[in-house]
Image (cartoon, rainbow, N blue to C red):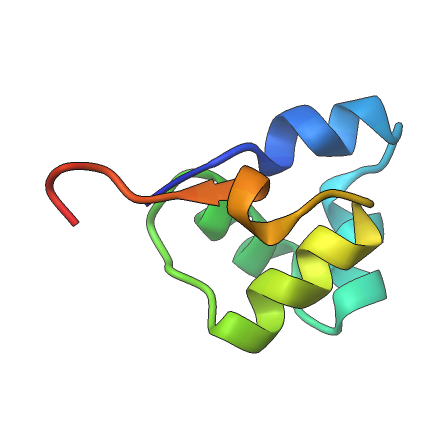
Amino acid sequence: MKNLIRVERARCDMSQSELAEAVGVTRQTVYAIEKSKFTPSVLLAFKIAKKLNVDVNYLFSLEDTD
């Protein structure tokens, strides 16, 4: 699964730590999601999208291998 979290965090001038705190996870979790090493739950994906003011379908997309 690809995601645009890093791009949208930059647009919002938000650090990984700030996003993590806002959605109730650790900075390491945000890092792992950004690097596609961890797939977030549906609830977490929606929380991240809401905090970044984007649609969840824009923020996350499936790859052919998913």
